[in-house]
Structure formats: structure tokens, C-alpha cells
Length: 139
Image 1 (cartoon, helix red, strand yellow):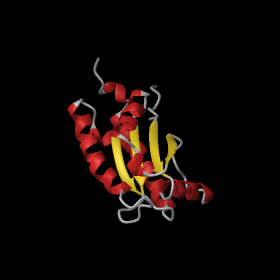
Image 2 (tube, rainbow, N blue to C red):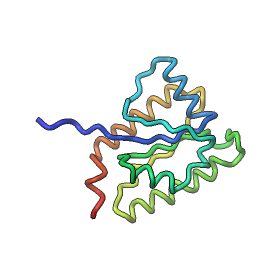
Image 3 (spheres, helix red, strand yellow):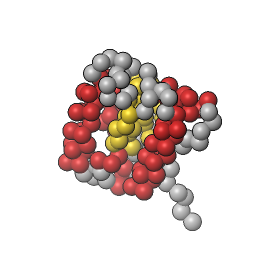
Image 4 (cartoon, rainbow, N blue to C red):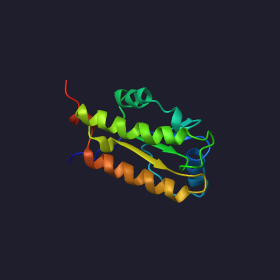
């Protein structure tokens, strides 16, 4: 019997909101998938396209970017930059034959530990259904 695919997911988490939401999910003992490799960044706006591409090149099957809700950014407009950048990057991934569903952006505040758990579970299931990224990468 074949082993079930367990995706590797890199998650860039904003220090002020999403990382705190992840921490609170842990404190509340909410079930969260072990597939997530959290990377703490000061702001989602600091997550460059190069960082996301590097995560994929290093073997990530999916990349999750979580930031403060629009209007709540500690750096005023960092999440606005992210909201513009990610859709463009998803189009670029599609151009190269990589399913854009492998990159997800969402907003999770420090008080939304249950949302953090829900988003991570949903994303792991999405990536699990897509299978390993090697299926999409040619040559």
C-alpha cells in the first residue's frame, strides 16, 4: 500500500499578528498540522517574491503567507504591499506550470488562534490533494 503524501509547507508569519495567533493556538492546544514550518517575519510586506521562490526551490510543496488584517498593519501599509504582490506571484507560478493554489495569502490576527488552526489545516489538505510539487516541475 502506498504511503500517504505529507506535504512540506513553509509559512511566513507576521510577528505582530499571525505569529502571535500561531502561538496562541499552541497555548490553547488547538490541533494544528505538523507539516507547517513557521518562519517569523516582522511584516508580511517583507516577504519578497524571492523568498517565496526560494522556499519552493528548497523543496516546499506549498507556501503560506499570513499577515495582519488590512488596516491593522503595525507598519501601516506592509500588508497592502503583500495584497498586491501575492496575486502577481500566483500568476507567475501558473505561467511556469505550478498550480497557483500552492501559494496562499490570508490574514490572521493575534486573537484568531482558531482561524490560524483552520487556515493551516485547509492549506495542508489543499496541498495534499495537489500532490508533490515535483509532479508540476518539468526538467
